Image (cartoon, rainbow, N blue to C red; front, side, top):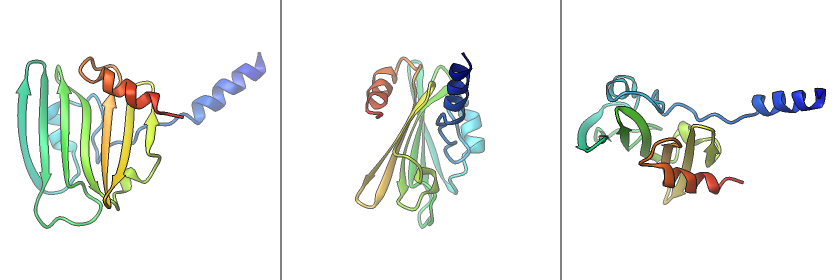
Length: 140
C-alpha cells in the first residue's frame, strides 16, 4: 500500500503542465484574453459563428524578438478552448517539449521553415474534441 501511495505522489509531482500562452490560459473569457495577452502591440479582429467565437491577433509590423507573429483565440460558449499561433523560432513559450498532454488540454508545437506553430486545445470542448484526441493519441 505504501508503495502505491509513493508512486501516486511521484506521478503527481512529475505531471506535465501546459504553460500560459503569453499570459493567456484555457478557460478565459474573450475580455480576459484581450486584457492579459502579452504578445506586444498588434491588431485585434473577431468573428462569430453559432456557439463559437474567434479573436484574431496580428503583431504590429516591425515587431522583433520572441513575441508571436499571429494568434487565433477560439472560444466555445464564452470560454477559451483553443489557441493557434505562429511564433518565431526564438519564442520562449515553445522551448519545452513539442507535445504536452494533460487531463484538460493538449499543446503541440511544430517546427517548419525556421518558424514555430503552436496549437493549444481544450480536451473537453465538443468542437475540438476530435482534434484534441488525435493530438493526444500521438503522445509517447
